[in-house]
Structure formats: C-alpha cells, structure tokens
Length: 327
Image (tube, rainbow, N blue to C red):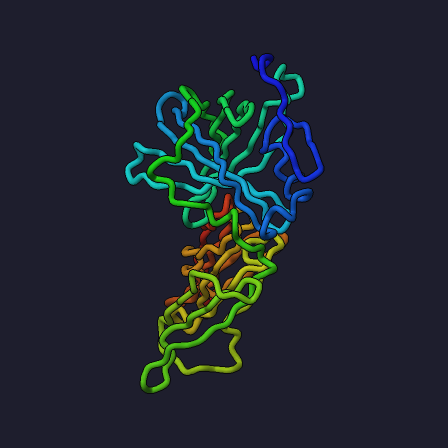
C-alpha cells in the first residue's frame, strides 16, 4: 500500500534521525532539541481529524493533537456528534498503543485508544482507532466506538481523513496543558452578611503557586457562624482511586446531619469535577474495601440508608432501605 514512499530524515543540530514521521519522533526531538524549544511545555500544532458514521447511523467528527508537558507526552482532543439534540464538543483523552507488527505497513500504522468524557467527568465512550500516516498524510484504517457500560461496539464506517479543523473546535483541550494533581493547593474565604452569618465559601485553587480558574463556590443551606473547630475543607480519596479529592463542609441536612460537596479529581482529564449526587448524601461513610459510600439520614422516626458506588466516573445509588429508629 505504501511501498512507493521512502522514510524521511529529520534534522536536529548535528544529529540525523531516520524515522517515518514527526509524530513518531516527537518525544526524541523534545529531548535532543531542548535548546530549540523555549520551554519545557510544548503543544504540537499538527492535528489529526476524521469524520464518518458509527454503525452507519450516527455521524461523528473527531480531532486530536499532542503535547509534551515536563517530559510527559499527552494526547487529547474532541469528538462531535453533529446530529445530536444539543451538539457540543466532547473531550477525548488518548494514548498510543502498540501497532500490529503483522500489518504489511506496520511502520506507518498508528493504533490509539481514547476515552470520551462528559463535562461532569463521566466516561461515556471508548474509541479504538487505527490509521496510517506517511510524511504527514494520514489515512483511516479502522475504528470502533465502545459503550463502557454494556460493551456494545459500533464500528466506524464511511470514515475519511479531514485536513482542516472544524468550526466547532473549541481550542486546545485543557488536558494538554493542565498540571498534575500534586501541583495543586488551595485557599478559602467566607462571605458573611451584616450580622456575621456565613453565606458561602469560595475556594481558590493554585497550581505550582499560581492561581488557576475556575474557583469553587458553595452556598450554605442554613446560616451559621464561623466555627474554628470545623474542617471546612479536607483532601480525601472520595472515589477510591488513590488520589486525594476535595471535600467541602456545606452545612446541615434535616435533623442536624452534616452535608458536604465533593470535587473529584480525574487523572485522565487532569480536572476537578463537582459530584452533584453527593449533595444527597448525609453523614457519608466511606468503605475502602467495598468501594462504596453510605448515607444515613434520620427523618420521622426512621433511618434511611442509601449506598452509592462509582462507575465510569459517575456516582450512583445502588441500594436503599428504611429502618425504624425504635425497633
């Protein structure tokens, strides 16, 4: 298929590397040509774009690009469904897999795995993509979209390469430039009314000492005075992935049960996501062994016990029962 193409030489000062194309030597160039790059962090201008159908029914458009952040290679982009009810770019985060060595053109073959993330951090799709690339010219080979909940597979059909960014492209994905979790710290402050009652809390996030957006703001359901003995914010592993998340005290549910807001860190997208479902949980109990969160809410002589579990970045209730407080 590609027998007529020859490998291209790419030059670094006093160094010649013979490899198929720029993408395959991106990491090496970053190391050998560090003096040619003004900073450690670099976003590659080149992108790859494809458009086609899923199972011959659902139109899609997909664009991604690469970056190097502090010596670490990253890949991210967006997938777009133009015929959706409310079409909007959906973040995809990718990684390069080993290509099939039995392919007759394996040296030009790229195999990629993407995960599709909604704005709330839920993963709603996986994408397996293969394409050929020779001297910057890329051609689709095959691809599959996979539902992470039921493993349903939809083949990419009628798919072709596109060489211009679509009008819906929102710009560089934040994943390509975001710092890692360990770079973050925070400061918080309260808004009070004229009598000193707390109204809300604002949390400013910092990465490597620099303030980053957006800030976190939570309002209190019931007014109360500042109490120095309360842990207003804690860093704890809410979703059991071994990475500390943010956990804010937001007041009380009925019958003086503590309420919290949760912001979970996603190591794939490198973002914090607010977990709206957590607002339902009273006096949360975390069980590391079963990886569940239990809510215990008292009301009208009964205890309502709800158990929640994570799946694909979404927290959902998996069981519920009511017990009498007088049995």
